Length: 316
Image 1: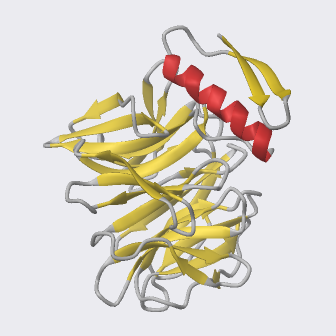
Image 2: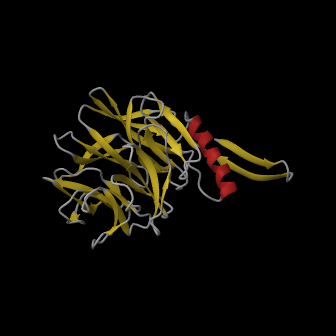
Image 3: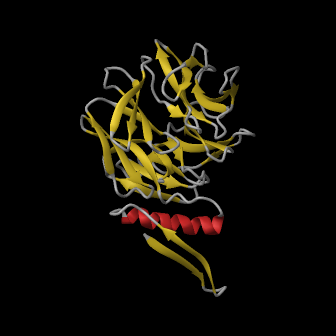
């Protein structure tokens, strides 16, 4: 435990006094909670210092589910598998991580529970992968592949009551929920090239969102609701991170001339920052950036082949 005292020198007054606690033996978490308290005082928004990032690391023939602090430090291997692991996704309360596992010989949705390291199959639907929890944690959305076709499905969080959300003879992939849980964004090649589409969580006709670029993928809806980050391939065959305004469809670039691959963006829980994978500097790395791309920091590099970083909630 620590007693935080914030004194504003110019004003000549004590601005904040607060007791901050963390489990014994976790001084980094204590420091991060102190930093979050200071950020919250000045911005009236939650900080993200005590949040965590989950990612998959490939080491030869082994796939590790790895947990990092928000600054890329303090790596912990949660799960090590000989079978393929893909696409981690946090349950909103931070208690479990949903992953795609090939443990059964084909892609299936499994959950990893942090409290007791339990790992169990969630959805028995064959070839379900890339699942994501709804903001209230009561539902999951995931694509299911059937032959040359894939559709987005939605089920209860325990995998029951699964229903097909899209029905186009095309590849519908990579769903991401709006923060109010009423809509999803997903990728579809129904118009010939992969583009982003919006659809009601209840179903219905999707609306195309992106019209620029011919290969847009991995959308992630901001917790603030206004932007969707995604990976786009430009005319030079280079992959970069972009954001698109949900209301207007206006696209802005986050990365440019920073390696040949910047991809798989994920939002911080306050919607102020992004984490994504990059090859700038050579070995695979993770970068944290603001949505305008004005401030970008490599937080992990040279730690193996890292993929699919996903920013989790603040540690309770």
